[in-house]
Amino acid sequence: MDWLAIKHIYCIGIKGVGMTMLAQFLQSRGYQITGSDVAESFMTDQILADHNIIVRTGFQFNEQLNSADLVIYSTAYNQDNPEVAWALDNRPTLTYAEALGDVFNQYYGIAVAGSHGKTTVSAWLGFTLWQGGLKPNVLVGSRVPQFNGASLLGSSSLMVIEADEYQNKLRYFQPKMVVLNNIDYDHADFYPTPADYQQAFIDFLAKIPTDGYLIANYDDPLIRRLAPVHCRGRIISYALDNAADYLAYDLKAVNGRQYFKVKMGIDLDDIAEEDEKLSKLAVSNAGNLGDFSTSLPGRHNISNALAVLAASVELGLQLYKIREGIAEFIGTARRLEVLGQFQGATIIDDYAHHPTEIKASLAALRQQYPDFKLRVFFHPHTFSRTLALLDGFVNSFNEADEVGILKIYGSAREEAGGISGQELAQRITVNRAKAGLKDEVSYFEDMARLDAYLRQSAKSGEVIVLMGAGDIFRIGQQLLVK
Image (cartoon, rainbow, N blue to C red; front, top):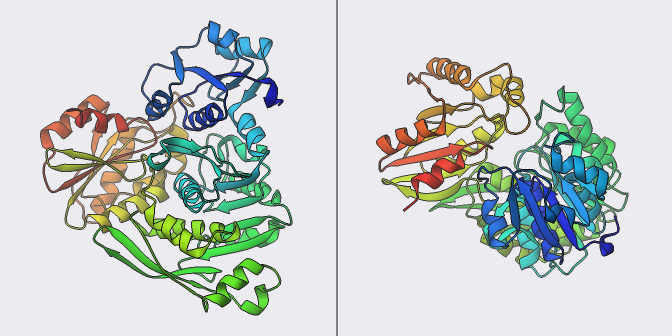
């Protein structure tokens, strides 16, 4: 795409998290951005409003679309959408993934990938590099309070992106560095089998050039097995429980912060010639990199911090600046985000929508709020995911004192499937009974009923978690309206 010839870009489906981050970034680069989407509220509405990006409601031919030099559209829509159909016949068009790839490939691209943790790690790494003076360009699929939005326009050749594997968007990116958090089967509507899902990551690893880097989580057995076989670049590993280049230990949680130490788990003779930066760091610190801390709860966020540390070292950031960035980052929207207090209860919004994420979030909350009643209300996201990972979902909620399930959110992807939210609630009830948790899991046909229930029952001493990738965040917004 000849970006120099473009002035006005129209984005169809602009409220999607990826589209919003791209729209904000392109606006920062000087392009006029307008777009369209459905009327319902999204978690991205605030970002678009804060940056004065005009969003039309509905999808009909309009003057803004007609005046656009380029149309970018979400693949949630196809030629049945009248704006997409018109644009394909009358204007240069790109899908969201094609556009992001075209932008990303102009830079020294750092792609944060994996099934879980992409948003947190990409934002955390971008923040650390920015605070350390490297001024990267950053695009994250969520609002980042410390970014005043979802992206940063930097002055360097570095670009950090959250690289989503859904619909194999990874095929559009040519990364110089990949941060790979984990590989855990997901998106059953696109990847029929775990092998298909894994293949997308295998192909992505093979794209890393010989002078590039893979920052790899060696606590993930699949990554440990696949990385040495398929990556031609230098592999830098991190772990909490396995042998790796960077090892976290002596983990402690005190007064709402986590503290940990990091040491180098490497043979200096083996790496001296392969990675001069890593070798110098290990030698100068006698293998011990010292103390680190973070306000983000949960063991999984120690792993995320290690990914940030390893990538930052390879990008040339000094250790003391990395330590400061890790300590000062406060997280992103919808990732264990404390929204406020309602009737004395703490309201938390969390994006977890996969069994592994649910377990990690609940473990983190137990750590953070050991003496509180933990009430979790989950909005399943897509029928295909719920059905494919059903056993995992059923076994994910035993840490909670109370569980409620909403009707499945099909989004723009699906209208129905072989499972219901009510059946999921029943199965979780049976599983909790086997664990000695006798309470019945509540089912809510719509959010109005959940809203009414929480207004009647919320009280001090409770943590109420609104969990899922759909629009359950609206409940928190409604409860906290003054």
